[in-house]
Length: 258
Ligand code: PEP
Image (cartoon, rainbow, N blue to C red; front, side, top):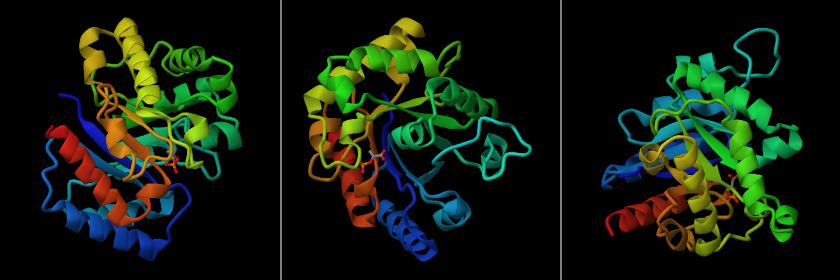
């Protein structure tokens, strides 16, 4: 069975004390939950990865970085390398988020380099792809998704579910309060899974978690993750409050247990 993933992308939010209290509240809340088949992840800003890690102690809550450099080391002021993340035991890293694509001009070729940097140290990339509103309205969603997959995964070998998580994040739904319907999202998730099957194998395509992102919240999560190819969520705004994050984990447990 594929892993359900509930991942909070905190972006540039929270200070030290807010990070500490979230981690302690969620680690506490998870103690009584049956997390079988469910991975809960939060992605704090870089300065707080260390304190978050210390706050976890034996909690099943996992951490993710929000980005990584394509470079291995050297004179790249402000950048953080995959090796640095690996040295603090980071299990996941988000790459290709639409905010990085639009504010930092990241393209599929650069995102592929980041993916390879993570692969070289065994960190699982959470690869974000998704169409803009203009692309959806002009009927280009499928072409855009396939082209992003082909660009980001060109000549990249994937052997197991530890090598890749895909986040389908329609750009028009991120931070807008506008969510894709379960049907709209399922259609794209099924397309991604078919692509994985053709590009890699049927066996592998069944193992890779494909999560949805775009204004997911406690009120709409169940309608999305109950679809057959939607294996959880990458959640921005609604992941900032511990209570809301824990509610979404409860929804994942409920759907998982049928
Ligand atoms: C995101 O940033 O990945 C995201 C999905 O944000 P939000 O949930 O706020 O739309």
